[in-house]
Length: 168
Image (tube, rainbow, N blue to C red):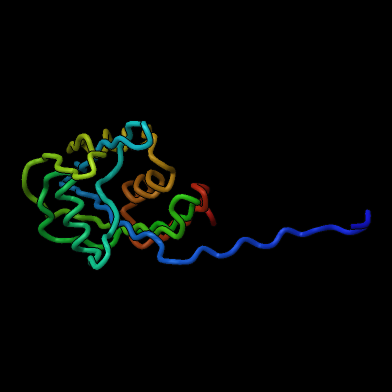
């Protein structure tokens, strides 16, 4: 190689295979909302209930299952789509999170998480829940959209993040 020659690294190969589908529920009752406490990567954090859609499962089926596992509550109707978050990270490439605004549920709060990550669930007044979420160590894509939605209740927004940084 001469002094004037440069080498260019080849472009990374595109990630193949399916992305990750996740559902989440804003469990609202009047001016109260359900939050879950999780142990993740050695940290305790607060978020809304939700989790991965299993192979062969419909989004609504996954939402009902995740709500039951993480809160013990029975989702009696899946509410409208509140917002969608699209993220990509090395750990979870091409993830789509669909969050539904759900007001129809019954039962008593009791965590039955088979993964053992969710350690608690509570029904909090909205202002208190927003303060807890704002101070949570959960990822930016988990917190920003839910706080924005709770402030405006404007449905249909799509949030995009690459490595937890917003894409406008």
